[in-house]
Length: 236
Image (cartoon, rainbow, N blue to C red; front, side):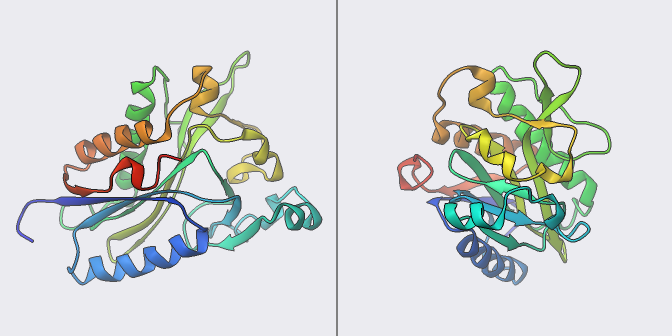
């Protein structure tokens, strides 16, 4: 593939979580074998709760009853990524980078910080001051009328032989009431917010996706060599 670090962007629209997980597994094997370029998948998921590898994956942080989850058709999936429990649903931009960190980015903490940087820059494009909090992952903003912070974007990754999978979830127009079903990321004393709530108006998910792609390419020093049309999926 030469020395150029190339990135293919695939926008898949609304995809069931299990299908996206299977696709990630396939792409990781292809990337590890050198048969494909780095890939950034951008998706939305139907309502789903996902468990990380922290503790028991966060099952104790499910607040909704089994009956409520069954009534809403909400499934729970074990993922193999880092972190605790999180929620995915419509209006949330989920990114799954399948990239090789060799030879110069073989540092797990730096990789997570770089993902945070992508999302901080994206939020800044919309006048939102995202930041990090020491000891926690993700992107946070100052909560209104309190001294605390609310999470704007969650991050949970898996790295196998320096090929990445899983990734980030950015709340764009997400219905934040759905986070009441869980203790998000197992952090009970901090809230969750969205770009739409902070901006006080509607946002177009495909425009936010374009911002993410631009900043991802810059932070990770990749050249975007192919991308799906916004109308191919994410614009929903």
